[in-house]
Length: 610
Image 1 (tube, rainbow, N blue to C red):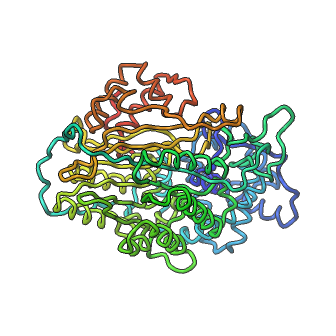
Image 2 (image 1 turned 45 degrees about the vertical axis):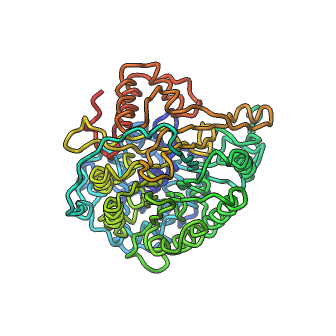
Image 3 (image 1 turned 45 degrees about the horizontal axis):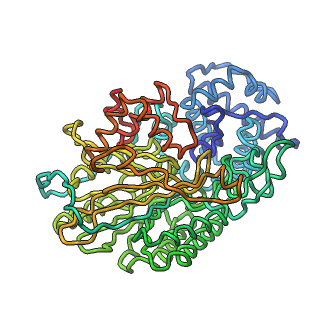
């Protein structure tokens, strides 16, 4: 990934064609170049090829400098393009090495930005507008990080890119210290007595509200996000953006969000409180400001107040809340690059529903704990501190903001008080974009407090799935489950969705266990065709999977059954895509699905036995 390609991949903007990450080369999109631009290009060409040969080990003492225009020939060469699109590891090393060289030469921030922008355009990674926007969005963060970075290209890319060598980062080699209090004997979970009180919990995730969604506009634009006025009208014979949303690269219209909230008002007697697990803004990551992100936060907070004024709302911060996207500096980053602007706003808005006792940790690192009922706690964690797309973590990944140390303290207190805990967050710990060290430390914490943590709730992937935790000394024994809620946004090729959990309720001796969950979807095809959106039950986990309960062992048994029962696997796969697939899943797909369900620890294939 040559610099901007790397940025695009890390910011979630990489365009997918045919299910594989590829580069789009569009020479016709190149703007007219001035003599100054040509000099910049020529300089960049020479650095590019020199760095490329160094990384590949093909450097020669008598390399000839590239003639003007040779970069385009170099890029347009089929072998080169195959290399750039296929070998992301090499591409990453070339990009990082080149960027470090530019920073070391003390090039000005603007000169480097221009070179990044031009290369993005020359390679056809995105159109000129997106390339320009991304170079402005990321320039300060990336250059600040690279100016302080002690790692080389191999170390950086081993962290950022999967299967790019063994990650070695002296600052990422850390282990959290658990409490010195011995883990109590594990008591297997039991079904509540018949007739025991229950509570119902609504989870909303990945709303990605787009205030500029415009019906009829081009939904197949050349940008990461479409269905907006600047995208113009669709090509002749191509349908424009739908009335209630679109399956293509488009986010949630305001009126669709209002329709969902009105439906929630109508069924508000069917749930008691809400988990809101992040990703509020749209996917226009090349053109966002801090004020844009705060405006979306205020708009959505107002919606909850308007439609669900009597419900408690418990939130977690997503990776899209910041500007630029994924940028969550640890507390030691001060000044204008600090994340204080966002955490201050979250503290103000979230304390609409939270006690003032949560303000300190929200401002410290975007996390908190609260006890809405006796014997029960909700802990909201900031998983952006495990996000490998958060460039700030290249400086130091060791328990950012002291969050995991704090988490252990809260869990130990809950254990001492015989309380039960639900954890909410955004990025699931088993996802590959969650840094290995953070994920493995979190996994260790979950296993230590398996009798206290009885539920975990995440989002981020936009899909409907789960991850099972296992005893690190006995991989046959499941210890926990992370539920991953499907998105409200349709981005992309998905129906909008939300979920309601049934949990053991508020009474003395409650287990607070998850008893069932129901997922609701809006069939967007039908809504747009008949101009009548309807939110309907898609499935019940307990009923439609035929599960006796939703304990960790039951989810483990479900995975085992899917390994030999293709009908059940295809059923899961249809739910995974919110009924936007026929459920077909070949052998490679089957192995990947089963592996991911067993992998609540990132970059760990120990349980991929199928």
